[in-house]
Image (cartoon, rainbow, N blue to C red; front, side, top):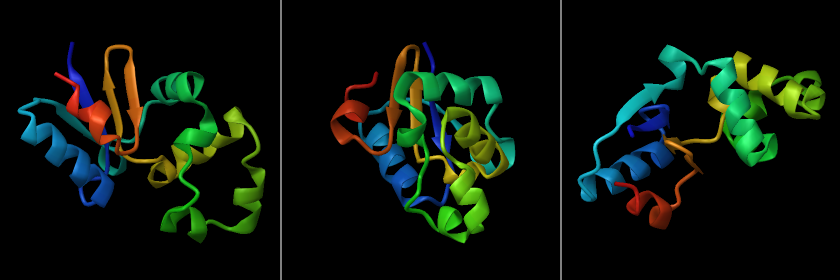
Amino acid sequence: MSLTVYGIPNCDSVKKARAILAANSVTYAFHDYKKQGVPENLLRAWVAAVGWEVLLNRKGTTWRGLDDSTKASVVDADSAVRAMLENPSIIKRPVITKGPVLIVGVDADAIGRLR
């Protein structure tokens, strides 16, 4: 089962997660949101697993930079998915997958247990 880290390379949270994986000699593939986007079916699967509120990063500069009408339109899973597809930088980072395991954000203990 392969492990994939989704995010943006210069994000501090992504850097922390990658450092944890490296310290534990865990190999992984990296998927860059900005260059590769996020497939809608994958994003919808994440939303189904953890909820759109967990995946939507409302604390970041990209979210704060969106116009008020766009922010106000995000009220449910479908509208959140649309917003995240249009602005991948508002997806919380990193998202780490390995089979059925899905980790959102930097959870050092959970990341350290991945092999």
